[in-house]
Length: 139
Image 1 (cartoon, helix red, strand yellow):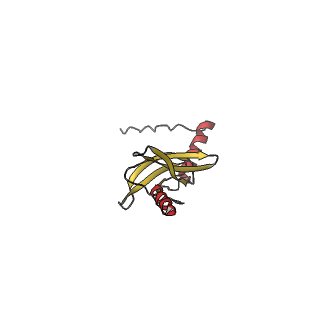
Image 2 (cartoon, helix red, strand yellow):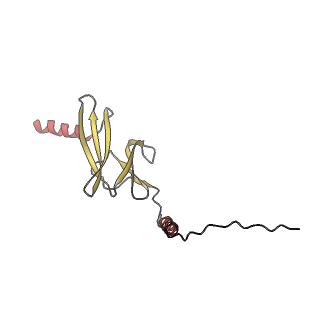
């Protein structure tokens, strides 16, 4: 019977309830970025790490949301990283390896190349100022 109590307790710890308050933490230890999902149980005052999600790139910002891309309810987190695009992660799924979806993420190589070229011109002093063309007056 003790095993059944332990299983029930483990199940309670893995399922998020409406009373749980989520605290999201973006962190990097050495070269391993991750998103930690902490749960604060308001009734008991207990705060613990529910699970963590390994991220493919270093996190810069987070935003919690409760609606997925199909309009269903759930716990989701938008994560902005150094990579183009914003990753949407499902916080209700344990051991997730990929985001639910990625917003944007277009190929920016052309924009980066253009910016690099403009910066090089500005630094080298070869950037030419455009001269206004004067219109000839008709008589």
